[in-house]
Image 1: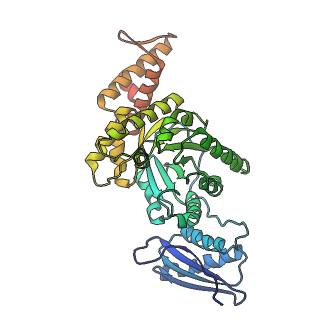
Image 2: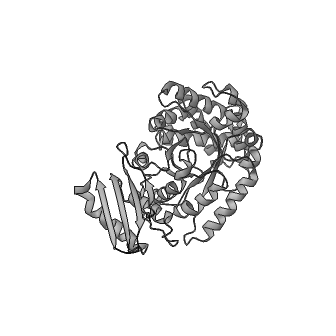
Image 3: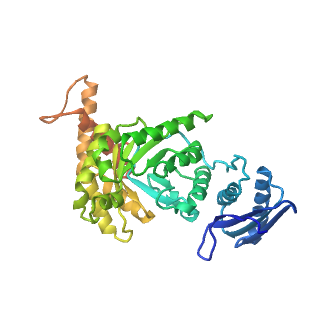
Length: 405
């Protein structure tokens, strides 16, 4: 009778920073570890020790464990081994978790989200050094970039990555699957200090409420009290028409994004760089987000080779009122930051408005004016934001007021 084999991970000549694990439960014979590794001489003993430790953790005494290692770091090995154990039904509800490698603070509602870099949730090689490129957010993606057959493996890997990766100040984001599968994602990843959940293909406020109910349930069972924020993604004609109710559906919403690949397919249009076919939808997203008091975030630019096209797309997004844009490659991050940065004229105008506001406050004046023009509170708020962005973009010294004294 053939023995059941439970597999997880990836193998082959082109695989990097990953491994393939096969678990064959047996009735006797103890633990047999068969390891093939490109780093056998350096790390072979530690890999075997990890396997033995995990088998003891899951109380598996008799099994054949085959590993083809292509330079996987420990948290990846842990994820692949656990995935195989869970497929075999031998986990008994236990989870083998890596230690956090950095201190993780509470998420921040009001922060810059100019760039967010998508990282496929089943490809560890793309995760390991992503933070060095310094996007505003790193997205561990469980949705479109993961094949349906790999969802369970990716879920465990993303969970481990949240604990074992250095995010270096980047916002910790996870894109879950669309409902109902996304609810299962929440159970796995939410306890591990996610800052923002990206919610794909949202078409109604009721979907946001369904997710919020599950989030409340999961968070209530945790020892550490921690918040998590939402970024719904609108990707259909119905979603666009319901944009404001969606944007206002939860106090956890901090941004509203649009995904144009699915949206243009839904309306029967071809997506173009000029974007005429999506102008209405993008304008609706900006207005809905602003009306709800959250950030509007533009779609990704899919041609990673076209830097001029990317720059033009970001400048257009900025002109429409968007605060950020998605990235599918690290080389897109810097051009996006540069294009969203305020111009010299915008900075000078913002400085004058902020100084006028602060002077009026000192004098106890209820009305702020600049020359002959009255300045409304939203204008002041936008000027303050422009100053903060200029400082963040290294275009203005944080002590800029001293030069005006």
